[in-house]
Image 1: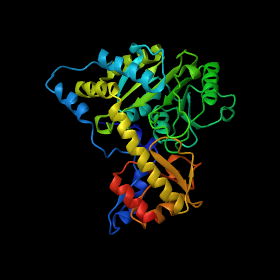
Image 2 (image 1 turned 90 degrees about the vertical axis):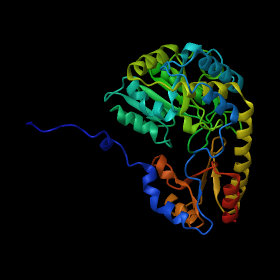
Image 3 (image 1 turned 90 degrees about the horizontal axis):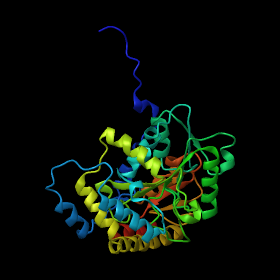
Image 4 (image 1 turned 120 degrees about the horizontal axis):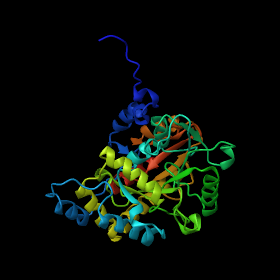
Amino acid sequence: MSGSSTRTRVSSLLPDFPWDTIASVKTKAAAHPGGLVDLSVGTPVDPVDPLIQAVLSSVAAVPGYPTTHGTPELRAAAVAAMARRFGITGVDEAAVLPVIGTKELIAGLPRLLGLGSNDLVVIPEIAYPTYEVGALLAGAKPWRADGLTQIGPQNPALIFVNSPSNPTGKVLPIEHLRKVVAFARERGAIVASDECYLGLTWEGEAVSILDPRVSDGDHTGLLAIHSLSKTSNLASYRAGFVAGDPELVAELLEVRKHSGMMLPLPIQAAMTAALSDDEHENTQRERYRARREVLRNALEAAGFRIDFSEAGLYLWATRGEACRYTLDWLADRGILAAPGDFYGPRSPEHVRIALTATDERIAEAARRLA
């Protein structure tokens, strides 16, 4: 065979995987005599509710392919849960699409929407890394901006919004979201709102991009992304969905059908059960509320300042020094956190401290901080 390959390795287009950069710090923290308290990753540690487990196994014998669009029961449960839990009304059941975890959707959304090298994708200044990754995978240009004036005269194709924020826990007010929607419609942009932490609001009020007070009941150009990983502990199930503009959801559905991107039927059944039951969700929220109180008090007593953190699974904390120094300080006490520089150049002095550890490990972290 003659000639040479001009293939570009996709991985070469991406930044280093952030967690690989703190391997040595993790080793140091794990050497603590009392063992590691890992507060670096927001992965659930509490069990999946037995009700959800039972429904999952109840359809384990079904052999056929699931539908990409999801069962009618799942879509109806999602619409009802959004209205009941968050006051989101006016969502057509056809405009709900289950996804294989919301990280998959966020990473693939620019490409699924057909964006490319001529397109600008706006992401938050301090942001979960996957927004940038999604733009890069599509060959589009990521642009960090929180204020609309930072975008200037450019016409973005897609604007990612994340409220409550990962990592900061910041909640965007209704008026700000209204301005984003108006700006996007003036420029012909799509707004994708990552709302995975909407059910974990501790202070004030967090609202969806689909909330009538934001959208005026018009979902044109709007997509809301929801996860069941957080308050239903379904991270291992890869259970999420996107809802909003019926035409955009139909476009995503068509592409995903061709790609075979379908959620397994047992997961769809488990999601339906989780979305239909608020008791387990309320129980889990209160677990996180108690852990947040313990950790926040301990961090502040140890000299940390907590910024934002009105919602979500994290405390956005600083000692007023470079975040990697703080990471080492915590590792000396057997505690592992995520450095702020994971989330962009605008957070060099913060660390993200997760609430996702058992009550025993949270109490141990508080003891060590004291």
